[in-house]
Image: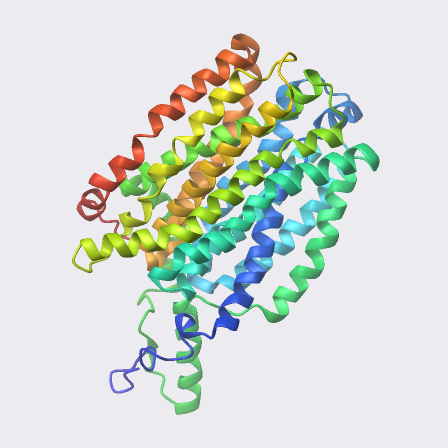
Length: 467
């Protein structure tokens, strides 16, 4: 802190107000709130998948594409929300944006439960997705706020990794409640869980955004010392309207003015799109080929969850170690691209999964085989998502929420639209050929992480984003 110059910063490297110097309990209480909500939000995305048939029957709709849209439209909300919620969190703080967004999420969950027709349900799910997108985007940035570089992969694996429960919880809740209580009760159950958690977050959630904390400190000191000249070191010396305008375009700038972020986001988006394509086709496959009940269909998603948990365990154990090792080889200098090193081990499991699934989804093959084919997919996607989001935080720390938003927006567009073409593709090519084509695409994509490691740093430094 430099009172003589009027600039307010941290007292020193050990300043307890700096979130990176918080106690272990302070850090992990915040991470606990984020982990809970970052599980609930994506759980809602796949909640409707097992009960799609019953929802269509109730509303008298026969189109499989519309049925797929009821699931994927929620993910499209993830493409809209981060464009303004992430930069708002950098301007006004993480806590208020997360809390207000949770309120929106709850309001439209109730709307889903009470939807009178299919258009109403689709609109309610879209708006619920926008509200639920805040925690998915801002959670990664909060990890960057409170953890140092060598701690982030482990924290990301634990906190972001709780999303791996979503492919289990969403279809399980949706499957059992749709069959026994009706599809509307799936939304009631999520709402019953979310409302009290949201209230507790409003009361107890601490702010972790560094500029917001320093701005509050500057305001306090201006009042206590009677000095109107005191300003935060991290304050943008611009009118509030101009600051807000600049903040709102940051995610777009990251997508289209940073080639490395565009390429990383595109890579994640293709993998994520393949994931949601599989998720939305599972009910049709297992209910028509294997004659599963709705609640049994929900259990088939366990393979994704098991694979994700194994993948996250691998990230937790080896990613930070890999970064430290590469940093030592680089003369002690850290490069954000080191965070992507282990993606080369996760990427091959995506095409392996697709090839197995392609040629085992038939009545002559036991149902357990296609179910087990989801395990390698879960292992692959968990490592890719966690490491790429952590890379965005490491590479663009001060504006990490907007950088992560670029990832979330692009992957959500693919996750929302790619499943809509699924029914037509599978109808024309069949499950075997259709998934083989996707497997070949995924196989080609396994070369991408090698390119990130070799040229990523050069690309990032050559095309720096001016925000």
